[in-house]
Image 1 (tube, rainbow, N blue to C red):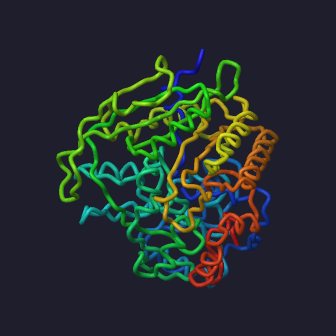
Image 2 (cartoon, rainbow, N blue to C red):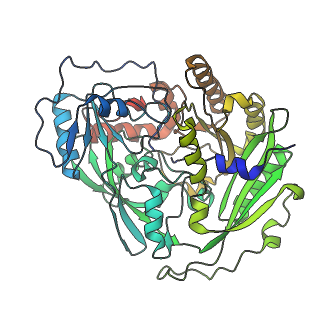
Image 3 (cartoon, rainbow, N blue to C red):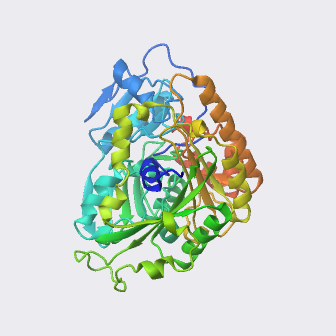
Length: 499
């Protein structure tokens, strides 16, 4: 008897997040840390509009993240009352040689937003959401995507791309890319930003865009926080639908599942395409569920963005030619925001049960379609349910490279790369098992790398500086030059381990 697809899809919450939040496999639990000064480096700080917190509780909280694997305790936490506070404190830290790391919702999985003995900058106070103007909206880096969506939907508009979990910060997902089911159509979240306001590692407040400080704009988007701290972003908007038609289509064969997914993102009949892999009754990950969503007519509140009218989705046309197992399919019509936020109930359930606080040694890989079946089959064949955990999930779905234009969001050289996300929940109080899972992550990464794949840097893969140079490849010199120019003292986001 197969697991129930709808239930498991609700559990795959926390997915690419994203989106999403500045979490990157570079953070190594065993990395050499900067020494912590014997006395607090923050004994004489300039006046601030907000608060500089040095109490144990605040520092302990900043030494934790969603991964619950790496723990680096800062000397202080800045809760800014203004963007000026960030400018002031980055300049202070540069003068005193103190490392700095921005932190959004703390959804990193491997200590990427932690900094031993340094300053953690909370971006959550920067949560303003501006007016919709000319098909864009400017929001603070600490704003959560759920609030952004609710605000723009009042105008019948929406950001084009969301990670599956909406409670991530804008600044966090923009630091890694921001992938989701709409990416095959609209690119990553970083491809839908028209301007950023940042504080560089030199303590300068700068606006950057494709036409202004373009090198900085390209170094910040998916740049892992290596050159600047995002304080606000201007996001492109599109017309939002009132409702969506949501399908879950089961497949017995991996090859057929992958081929149908590729077909859907190529012909564009669906607005959202993802999929997950579930264990069968023997515990083998051989049940494949293609998730696809077609948007209905746009909201009547939308105006000024043009575009052809969209008819109501037709099930027959949408499913024509697909080779799923008819008996196991589900289809439902949902309110658009209900669809976007469909993971909220399972996340609350995990928080209430305590699973949210378990280790999360995630693995996120980008596979070339030329070898996706062999790679996925081999990696999935080595998984056991206990390697995923009771609330973990495995995602596998395609992207389209031609709409992914962010230079530092590295992709396989393939027109239709696939994201394979093994979103594990590890056992609490069992560091030996977590260490084994991290080693499994590294081995899977090396297998994919040798086949021309990449990692999507939102998980827990042990990486060193040579790995990062290899990962960024021909884009690394531009990142290194931007780092030298905009963070000349090298104080920003050391937990990533890039430099």
